[in-house]
Image (cartoon, rainbow, N blue to C red):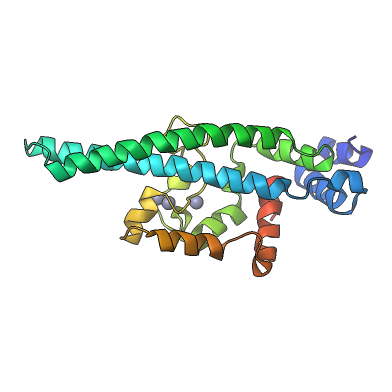
Amino acid sequence: MTSKFENLLIKLGKPTWAQHLRHAQHIHGPQKTKIDPEWAKDIIQMDTRLREIGQREIFLREEIRALRSANHNHQQQLTTEQRAQLAKWQMELEELARRYWHLEREFYRREASVPPGPLQRAYATWRSDPEWYLLGYLRDDCAGRGGCCGRTCGCCERARDTEKRIRLGHCTIECGCCQRARGFDLTHEDRVKYQKLFDCDLKENEALWDSLKLAYVFGLA
Ligand SMILES: [Zn+2]
Ligand SMILES: [Zn+2]
Ligand SMILES: [Zn+2]
């Protein structure tokens, strides 16, 4: 149930104050509003995985297009190695599509199971802002991890080149623009290392993840 005070803040045109109030209710409210403590973490992780898959797919499509057009411009036939590379990428694209399909449904189910109460109201409010992901904290986090928000390319400000539901949002380790700016391909070890570094279950990442949840779910930084 929405509190009277919350409604008053909304009426007064103070949506951020209402979000602060919901956050306070969520943190200090009765136990029933605190059910499912893993929810926010799951949502952030799933959203990140979906963006990872989408960004990898965009990168592969760009690489395929570049390889084909380079050969086309020089009126050359594809070499055996190039054909093998294309087949490999094609297989990876199919695997990515499959993974995305399954994960998108899991994400929908998890998103729809937001615990009722202040958390649900806060999340619905924040997601109704089409530019929620451009919040300063989320942009700084993207830049800090080496994402496009730290450069002038503007990739995070526009919809990425995909038909997928998750077209908007920040760079993941699979962002093609980041990869080109970085100048090297990440190895499997690099990926594992990166994931460990920002692992939400690490004690030393607790403050980072609390801020991330606050920004991601409540729009507060
Ligand atoms: Zn990027
Ligand atoms: Zn970029
Ligand atoms: Zn970004």
